[in-house]
Amino acid sequence: MEGSKGSGSGGENDSSSNGRPPNPLAGAYRQFFSSPQVTSSCKKTLVRHPSLVKMTSDVSFGPPMVGEHCEAEFIPIVRSGAWADIGYRPSMEDTYVCVDDFMHDYGLKNFGEGPNAFYGVFDGHGGKHAADFACNNLPRFILEDEDFPKEIERAMASAFLQTDSAFAEACSIDAALASGTTALAALVIGRAVLCRRGKAVEMSRDHKPICIKERIRIEASGGYVYDGYLNGQLNVARALGDWHMEGMKDRDGGPLSAEPELMRTRLTEEDEFLIIGCDGIWDVFRSQNAVDFARRKLQEHNDPVMCCKELVDEALKRKSGDNLAVVVVCFDSKPPPSLVTPRPRVQRSISAEGLRELQGFLDSLGD
Image 1 (tube, rainbow, N blue to C red):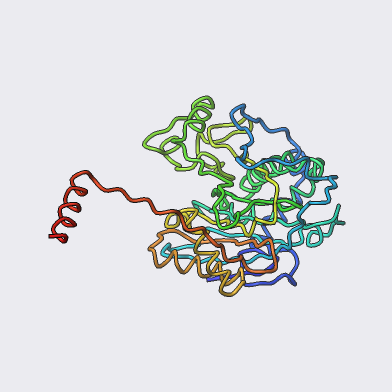
Image 2 (cartoon, helix red, strand yellow; image 1 turned 30 degrees about the horizontal axis):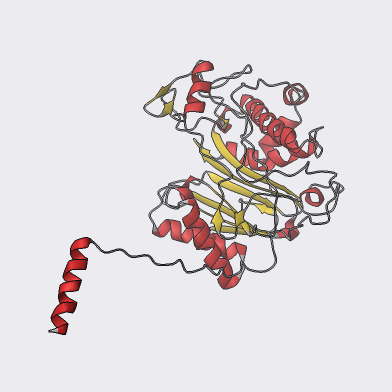
């Protein structure tokens, strides 16, 4: 097991005082980033398929996130924790990153008031190298994007594609790195994703090849879905890495996409915390179930690290068969409040036959 509080990655236990997360493959990555191929590959324009559109939320959207002034604006107090466990798998392929002070930890000047934080869970497959690479380099690509922080969503999408392209170059230098990873990340800048007054609000969705939109995109890109698997090989439709798998990706696109699906929503005082988890968590928890469980634990001890550990332990008790990694981000220094649910009016009905029997019983009492 491994846990984290504040800033750090899933490589080992650490705290916010450690600064930037460690790089598990530092040697291979330094070799790659010192290569003259980097500049040309990372700045390359990547193909965006028309079906890759931004998700919309059922909660109202506010004005632009940057350069906005509003007296009623809620500025959260961000706290985070994380925990990971190998589970019942023979090797660990999942990792995470928690950076409560994004700009400071990466050596940049803050661009405004309020929080600036980055969190992510990377669910690797075929090895851990792609997950480690994305964990350690995705935040940097976001910060180095020319559209950051004015165009957050564009910078996020570009950073995912840059990370995927950079990993392809790393794999061309060292074939042993070949692997893939899915990624779920949250960038908190004044507003964020949420658990709203105990209610689970879905801020992401699984990208399975059998989903209609994904199937259409896959087939338009020259791929196919067989028995629920992309090209009969992968059970995900979007991932970083997997450049070694034939027919999945090339420089002009391919059925396996690295482009993220983005959602943005306004953070309010009703938003309590965020759960980011890998498949090992969601295989045994429904969204509302996870929120209820985490909320109850936070009310008990108000510690996001302990909450993450308890989520992982509970998933293991429920016989999750995958690696486990989870991040919990709290938006207030206080624990979630107790909710008072109004008692509904109870309405009962009785059949005509029941009424006759009741009437007969009452009549017998009169005799």
